[in-house]
Structures are given as C-alpha cells and as structure tokens.
Image 1 (cartoon, rainbow, N blue to C red):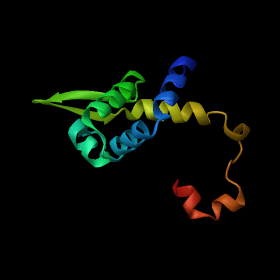
Image 2: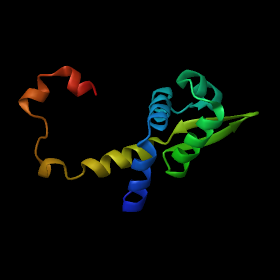
Image 3: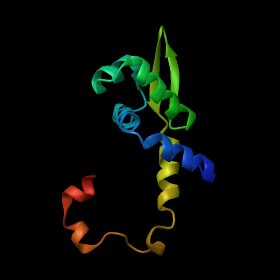
Image 4: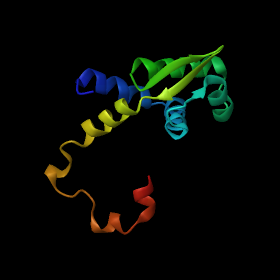
Length: 112
C-alpha cells in the first residue's frame, strides 16, 4: 500500500466513526473475523447502514470477506493495516526516536 490514492482511500474510509469502530472491532476479533450481524449489534448500528460502512472498508482494501454458510464473515486485512501504518511512519522523526521523555513516562498515551 504505497500508492498515494490507495492510502487516501484507506484513510478516508477510516475517517467515519462507525467505520473506525467496526474496523477496530475486526482488528480485536483477529483473523477469524465477525459476521455483519454481530458487528451491527455490538455497535448498535442498523444492519443496512453497517453493510454500507463495511463495503467502504472493503473497497479501501482494509477488510476482506469470506462466506461461511449463509453468513459473510468480515475480517481486518492485517497486511493492509500494517502497510498503512508503515507508510505513515516510514520516515518518522528522520530516523530518530519519536518518543519524548514526557510521552515515555505517560503510560496512557502509549496505550492509545
């Protein structure tokens, strides 16, 4: 994921609260993923609305799907996620340490 248009598409897909929450939930779920109905229930989002959001994430290359019987399981594409984060941080701080002494002493900032 080094094409600027692809990066912009991925960031735009994540720049919406329901999509970001769904993506984070899928990251937490791991490679097994979750059915759309489970995600909709947990996020308290209408299934039709969630389908739209999941489609946006899939088009951006952040989510993949697999059919499991009558259900479709959604899972985070960890390679795409890591590539996106890698792209954003590849030239971080000119190769130096980006963590200040104050940030290193504040555990809650490191957990975010």
